Length: 309
Image 1: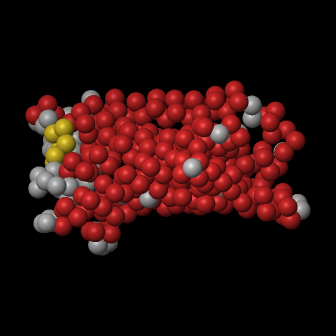
Image 2: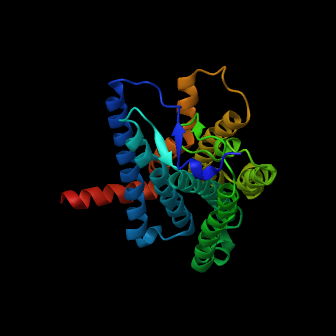
Image 3: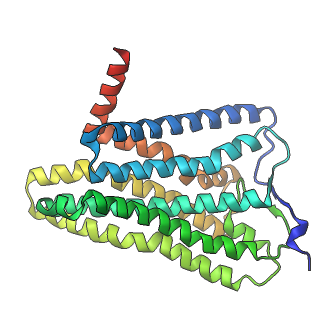
């Protein structure tokens, strides 16, 4: 049996032979990363600097945007270091750190979207009790629980991975993926596989419960409510629903690609879709929320006007 200590790094083989086009791809990824950082940071600063935006909906949105930056840090600097070179390797410690970062990003995203759906349920279905049920202390507690729950949950995954004995170090990925690393193990992975399924359930299906509950209640109120209630629901819920669908699509493809044989799908499409939930979501959220929420759009415009003056 080969000991995992003999493999101080992993070799990533999903990078195509790009030739001189790799410099073009490098510039594209760099520009995308700059746009993501700027767009998310702009909305975070706007929410933090304006007291009128210190409401639960915008505070939860701020947490969501911080998570976009957190997830982007786990991927984009790594891609920028890999693209210009012909050999693509990552150290064992950095690989496990990247796995931890990206998986906690996914968990925080789903949990944050679940809490935001509950916030919309209270605002639309229980407007008179909204402020009493979602005080600033409760909002801070919910955000802290979202992050602590996700960070602690994946510490277990990390510990289970570190104890594995690996029989190889070549993985057909652009970045480190927990499932593919576990597949390299020559030791028993039963515990890893069971906890992996359990962790997937906790990450996706547990947040789905408050989301389905909230939108069932909102839909019922919209059916029997006034036109004003329906307009309020559409204006504030549509960005959340769009964000949830967009992120779920990217995560579902990544799960399918990991668990099933996807060789029938062209390689370039598999590469693009494997990066979808990590690259599109961080740019999609600030755009959709910035455009759809008039209060944020107005504050951003005011900030730019003040700077010009």
